[in-house]
Structure formats: structure tokens, C-alpha cells
Image (cartoon, rainbow, N blue to C red; front, top):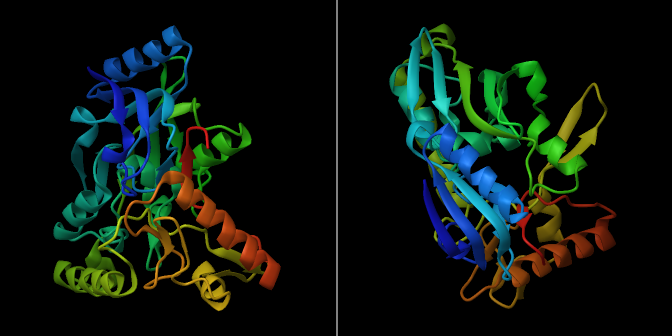
Length: 312
């Protein structure tokens, strides 16, 4: 188990901002995770499980706790046969999606452009271009805070739009500092491309189209954390609709608006980017300003999709 003290979190987040974590631990097995949690308890400080840091904003003041990042055995993909896979939480989502696609399995191939880890994808039920990770997930293996390992079914995970039982529990606790459980791995059952009348090459072509759209419509050349705000729920329970927040942000005249080094992207209004020298405080303040202006103009409350860590 590798332990670093006062590790700058700007090195571990896609925003490239944030102060230092008191302790930063790379865990390559379950014993390492248990050791890191024991360290947090010994020091009487919280802990946080970090994926790729692609949906995270860490305070400029840092995080007075233990940041645990998974590696080693948590990065493995096991082909169980007939479209079933067991995937470690630290595995890049894109690597899993592409691996399955090359074997001729559909269901998540359009998610290959999402930069996060499998664990993070499960936590927020990541999705793009009409696909989500949740529907194909049959089971999630977790480590409880008491050190026991248990399995959750798809129904147990309560997947919804950009949420799961994991994110809901943490929101209810009003803190994500001490998770109820740590996602270790997940099992999937993917449909064969042939069942949809497609080939692996067809899936490759669909992915290429999605990647081209992503490149054309998102500020991939600037530090960001993906969509800043969740899509808006609209319509009835029988006919739900989701409206893109970027439309309202753009109509409020906020595209290109800056606070410090943080900017509402001129490419996609639902992205806040680090345009150079931004601080976490700049980014948070800009997100709140956008929420305020959209609420004033349209009476709509935007909900942040990005996770905040530390004291702001």
C-alpha cells in the first residue's frame, strides 16, 4: 500500500485544480483498502474513494482526509463467456466498452468516450448517446464499512438518471466523506451485436460517429469535468422527457462568461472549463452564478452533476 502525505489533488483531477489531500493511498487489493480506512479511523478523519477524478472539484484548501484510489486487481476485466463480464472498479470505462465491442457485444459501446472508471460509472449511472451503464449491470460487489463483502443485484442498485443507490445514500447523509460502501467490481450481461442484426464493425462505426460528435460539441482541449449540470426532468411520469441545461444557459447569455480563470465554454454551455489559472473557488462560484441566472430568467433550478470535495 503506497501512502503519500499532502498530495496535490490538482494532479489527480481533470479540472487541474485543488489543494492537497492529507493522505493519498493507492490500494491494489482489499487489504489495502481496509488499511487505508483503518488509517482514516486512527487519525479520526474522513476518507474518499477516487476514480479518475473526471467528475470532481476539490477545494483549494485541499481535503483533510484520506483519498483512496484503486489499482492493481481492481483494474481487471474477466470474460465469463456468452456476453458476461466481471470488471474491476478501477478499470477505465472506455477500455471495458471497447474490449466488449471487439468481441461483438453491444449495450455499452457508445460509452467508450467517457473518461471515468467503472466504479465512478456505476456510482452515477454514467450514460451517453442513448446508452447507460445501469441496464446491463447484473451485480455489484461492495466492501461495507464494517469490512464485509456483499453483492447487490441490479434492483438493489436502484439505477436512475445519473444516479444509483450509492449516490442517493451519500446525498441523504449530506456527505460523501465516509461512503457506506466501496464499489469493488461489477458484473455485466451484454447483448450480442448479432442479436441486433449488427457486427462488431457496425458497433465500431457507431462509436466513431459518437466520438466525432463528442469532439465537435465538447471542449475536449481544455480542463473540465464533463457536464456541469444534470439534464432537467420534464413531462409526466408516463412520458418523461429530459431537457439539456446547456440550452437555458446559452439563452441566458452566459456562454463565454468568466469568473477568474473559470469560463462557461463557448463550445458547449453546460461545460465549465479551466481557461487558464482557474481556482476551485472560481469554478464553484461560476457554477452558482449560472444557477442563479437561469433561475432568475426561467424559474428553473439547475442541479450540479459535479461532486465537491473539501471545504469551500
